[in-house]
Image 1 (cartoon, rainbow, N blue to C red):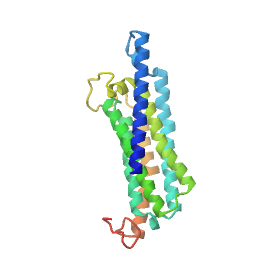
Image 2 (cartoon, rainbow, N blue to C red):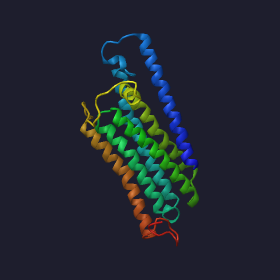
Image 3 (tube, rainbow, N blue to C red):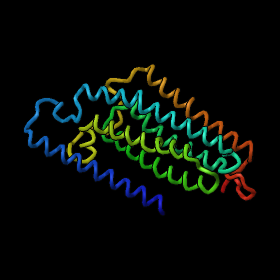
Image 4 (cartoon, rainbow, N blue to C red):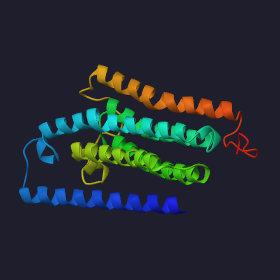
Length: 239
């Protein structure tokens, strides 16, 4: 009940904040009068958009991957295979999927209201799953301050990315909020694709730094307690 309440409050706060920001921008645009060209609707100019994109690519995404690796290291130090077991590892793999889908969308797809809605939904699903993860982990093992600090990055870095992507694609956020009509209602590949070397490097790094370690952790869990999600005598596979 408590995790659901916290997620609901967070969602309401972010929705209210986005709505007030959009309303403020709309009023400001109305006072400024008609704009010439598409740039009048943008929250950022071309240079700021480019800097924002690079900050997400080369700063935010690496921090997120590093925090995931640090969290895995803390799991290993706590002998997770004999404490929380495969159940917690599977929850973390679920969170990787919830975070990976928005990342894939941002790397490959044109940012439009549909893609933004997927990113927002992915963020809140990730938050709810993170609360489930911690509420279970603290009953099975000690969650040390270093791991809690890694969790803070894993939760806030995606929010930073979501805010920056939304501001860099302001007309699409307005369309999502119903303040601007956008005829595009289907997923589209980027008009100006990111460099293939970067896309492949980012996806490969995510797999090596985050996915592989948690698969290794799952293998350790299985070997320590075959067929069990929880390393106890009454923890069968379907528990």
